[in-house]
Length: 309
Image 1: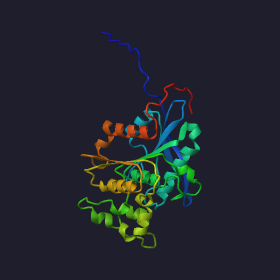
Image 2 (image 1 turned 135 degrees about the vertical axis):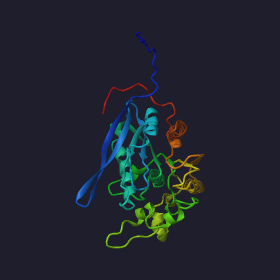
Image 3 (image 1 turned 180 degrees about the horizontal axis):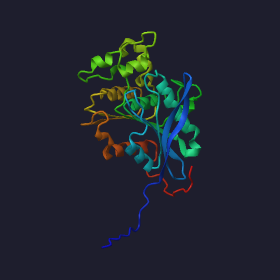
Image 4 (image 1 turned 90 degrees about the horizontal axis):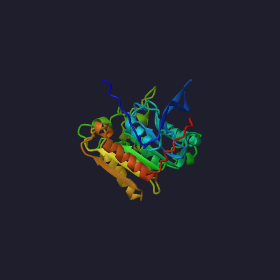
């Protein structure tokens, strides 16, 4: 028996999305080698200028898998936004390498805005965990000379909105209120301590994060807050046993105290990178917030372009 079917009247509600994967956005000298740092891009096939979102993946300062969070990234692209996901150097590379990479990834979007159809006045940053740390840092140093790598201009560091999921704002207080983690975070082998102090080679550099508070503050986004920053969305789970949910509270309070716009969201039952973060409820919340802050609600024009990049 043949069971044929005809579908009539398919509504076009989202653009086609092209992926440009493993694009080199910068080259970093490492001894006698050159390391290429990569990003992947999701490009909606529309003819209009589009907002862009630059995603930084989490990984405890030890990994930067920029192919993560495909559901969220694709949801943003389906809204008509360009979505880039960038890797960055992790430990044993020492701060500020991680931030220099983030700023060069943003610079790449500025320099290639015409190619990808990006409206440079509407570029947001997004990250989870250590990627949330980077997103917060990009927000607090937006359009400034702070932590500015060679060859990147101040104007190329400006972002329009910041989203951080269970991110880190203060390196000296990552484990606040989490039972059993105080000794680890205070020790010289914690990722944050190695990020700030570096790896010992010939000279013993081992020290806990709180043994050199000046260096810890220099590497913490909360210590760069000033008036006039872009809007922040800070999300954290109340069951997080890796990064204290107080990190979002500290950051939100400091931002508000200096007159900045911030929305803090506590996700009940969610842990650190647990399945809750990949569900439509969270994805829709983030995409709706970004559409609002980037002035993009219902503005995608679905006159699909046949042009390819």
